[in-house]
Length: 192
Image (cartoon, rainbow, N blue to C red; front, side, top):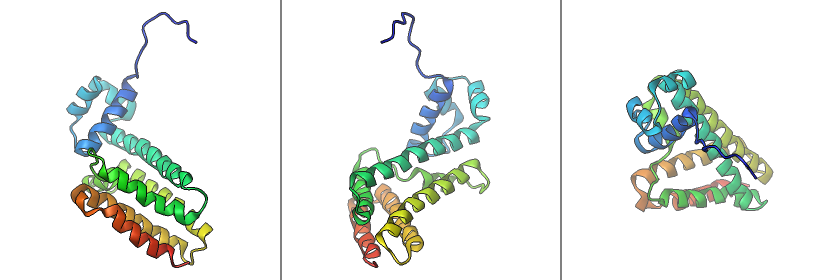
C-alpha cells in the first residue's frame, strides 16, 4: 500500500497522445487532423514531435499498439475455445460476430489505414503488413495441428474471411457477415 501523500499524476503526454490517437483514428480514420489529436490528448504540438517525430510516427505507433492488443485478443479467443484446433479457429468467427454487432464498431482499423495511407512506404503500412502476417501465422499453426493438407493457403483464406467480416460488418451489419464467414470457414476446415 502506498503512503504517498502528494497529488496523483495521470498518464504523461506520450500516453495521452497514444490514447487519443487510438480512439480518434478508429472513429474518424487516420486522416484525423493533428489539431483534433492534440486537443483530445490535451498536449502541446511539441509533444507530438518529441515523442513520435510527427503524425506519421504517431499513426504507426497507434497501429502497432492496436495490433498487439488485437493479436492478444485472437490468442485469448482461441485459448478460451479449448484445445481442438477446429473449435479454436471457428471461435474467431463467433467472436467477430460479437465485435461487429457492437454499436461502436467502425470496421477494421488496419484495412482503413491501408486504404487511407497512399504512400506504400508510410511506416504504418509496415505495421499493418506485419500484423496480418502474425494473424495468418496463428491460423496456420492451428491448421498444421489440425492436419490440414494446405495450412498456409487455408490460413490466407481464413484471413480473407476475417477481413470480409470486418468490412461487411461496418457497411452492412444486418447481413450477419460473421455467421456467413463461419460457414465458409467450416468448408475450409473440412478439407482435412
